[in-house]
Length: 378
Image (cartoon, rainbow, N blue to C red; front, side, top):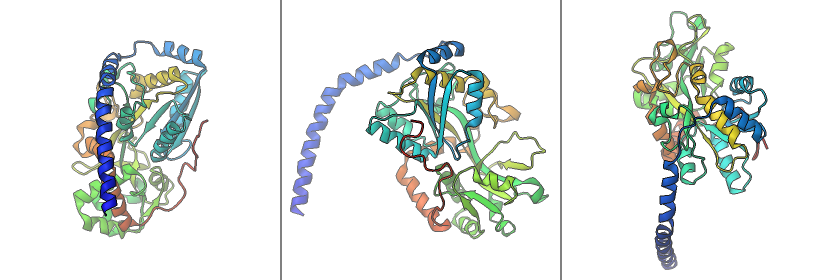
């Protein structure tokens, strides 16, 4: 006990001295950094000019994208290459929770691979910014991005809106479609629901948290007794419903603007929780293909690209959502701000994760993107 206290006293004294020295030595650096950030202006070059800059650089681009299966970003990749056919784009898809620590390890080992990261793990972007890991850059249209979907100095920004809720097979439910998520605990849906593991995916975790807070733990217990089919990957509920393995999918993405004749309906009930967020992206300092990264960010945030969003929502305030939708941040039951706050508190997230493990069991199965290792795309 005596030795422990003595060592703590010594460490405290040393830390105090180090902090004092740091404050003095870094004051001018902080002032310089603030001045430098203030000088970042919005991009004025056209996409054609940025394309030529990227080709002059070599035409290569590597993006680490959060997702569930290797082909999940193929639509974006193909659209980018259709517009910029001489580019060479490697779009590496993995769970965001693997990509973020992968990038951390690459920084630590001086082996950085990606130029751009676009991830669901929102908490990493402010942290990386504090560590000076992100290039401060404002693509054209940056001023039109919803205020809470961007860092004011351009360190990171959301490039697209994603949303999680429940879905169902229209033909299978007939006239008895679940009107709200609360209905999913009704006995008639026993053994008919597929769900993303809430203790594996943070967005699913937060959605289940919202359900627990709205409906209570007794409801969670009833849901747990429904013999849900859990799988890794937020794409799996949709796969299960679309292939008629299950009638209902829970904690998966979708769109409210699909045609009324679509066989699967993704549902949001007024006054009941669902989840929406802006998928954040950033250019990494030390990236090998900065010009290509700038082209990509400008393309993703362009009006044309935002208007082509599959779910109708945009991160820009000057793009009217399709299908009569409101901007995602105008839906209080989407909990846009709450998700960002939740993601920043990792201890709280872990408590919820382990609590749901008690109800639903441990996560089982291989990760749906496969095991990509330390340096995919290298």
